[in-house]
Amino acid sequence: MSSTPSLPTARGLCRAVRCLRQALLAAGAAASLLGAAAAQSPALAKAGTAGHGGPAPEAGALGGPGLALLSDKVLTVEWEGRQVVDHGVVLVKDGKIEAVGEQGQLEIPSGYQVVDVGAHWLMPGLIDLHCHVGGTFDINDTVFLANPGMRAKTAVIPGNPSLEFGLAAGVTTVLFIPGSGSNVGGQGLLFKTGHERFERALVRDPGGLKIAQWGNPERWMIQPAKTFENYTIREILRRGKAYGQAWAEHEQGRAPAPRHDVELEVFRDLVAGRAQIAVHTQIYQVVLATLDIIKKEMGFDVFIDHGEFDGYLLGKLAADLGVPAILGPRNQAAPSRGIINWVGDNPERVVGLAAGFWEQGHRMVGFNTDSPVIPQQELQLQSAIGARYGLPDDALQTVRGHTVVPARTIGMGERLGSLKAGFDADIVVISGHISDPRSRVEAVYLDGAKSYDASHKRLW
Image (cartoon, rainbow, N blue to C red; front, side, top):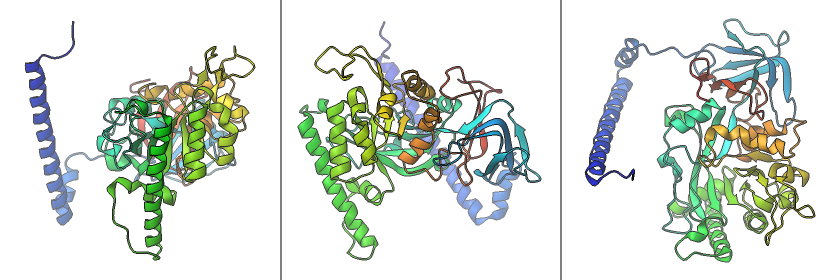
């Protein structure tokens, strides 16, 4: 039986959606009016919260008292420095990490709430740089083959159920990006998973520019082949780079202001190094084009997104060029007896992609889900697969692939991805190693506030 609603039912659903939208707009307008009035009247602002039980900020959150988290094992995962503190304490105040040290050596200030998680571990929140479940799924605008002006942020739904499940698995930050239906899909948004308001969730806008270098865009209209797609990417990057450089000259006082071009505005951030390019790229030929065109020729900060099949064979070149590899959702290359044999002299070998990049000397290796291709809450399984197929973990390589590596890849290495003084207090309480599928997330602190507690209701 078909599940497609009948025409009258579909019309009824449309009317219901319109009514709901009007109600939400009216509620938003009322809230805006109340906010404006409160801004003019402190008494009204006070009255608006006093009688309605507005909760005081909790320990660790912005405006609240301090929080001290005690654990038998704290994974600090610093880029250079400590990786683990045994019998550690993490001090949190105003949503930031104040200090990390050993119990008995790091003094806990008076008035701090102390929470001892015992044998459970503390680690930084997980970061996924390829997410399509931040709101309306898989934003594609394929009128043109290149759409750098399109913004995924218009589709964001903070706190939606998919993000809620991701948070329950320790995913605290995602890069929500357009789909791969066109060569240049548009701008992504970097935001946190557990906040209900857009302004609180936002980490950076634009989060990055999505490019798909083959593997879907060839279905566009005239069905372009790789040569035409590479031409399209090169042409839009050439125009965008010139636009960004013109604005940089103006901001330095050396040239008049260029004419605004909405399509190319993102290149002001890309040229300035405030954003990066995420490239849907896989197989040797396509990854090589990514490295040659986007990094070597155009000079943009870029990272390999997917990097599947035999793309790992370019690991050394990617490492030499400083191009990170954020891998998934396929994390192994099966043997092939077809026209491509990407496993060299051993056609029976199943190659772990993370191990393949690592063996090539690449150290900036991370993981993604391409959610919902892989559910957001299964991000940790991507590193488990990586370890199963050969990625070493003697120096927390799998943990780093979820935390400090994606943080630095997306230009947030001084704010996210480590438990270190001054960083955002995005902290996961977990029963064991993140890449052990038996490990369970017990609690998640987001900007210092407890945003998930499995003891109340376990979601994952």
